[in-house]
Image: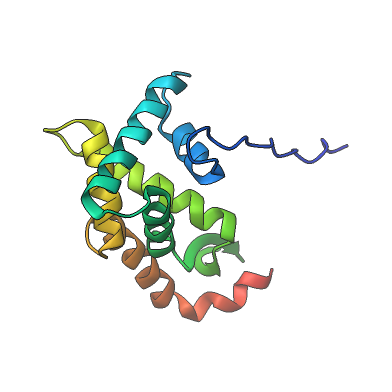
Length: 156
């Protein structure tokens, strides 16, 4: 008998912005359960974004996530002994997850300044349609486009 389906935990919004997106970002940045450190890094990055752009940091982050989110992705599907890269549409929840993950990883790979400065820089780069995150999104779209011939396997 199968186990019951996993229940999603209800996420509480963060204190400063009252946003689920910010609390999700904090949770993804957190390492080893040190949430306070992650919270401070995110808030410092948001303050720097607000100082540089003169706009609300949450609006800038939402705009960046919209631009970084992929529309299509490829998934491996095994059909008759052969494995095909099948292009599939990305769900709304996964779009946000991938965009946040890519932004965080791009900021982590850089060296030379503090992490909050890199996080701010990466979010602004995505908002301006430049940087590693946009390249990753475009690469994912190219892969989906190249494997368009296998799209009919998506329904199985």
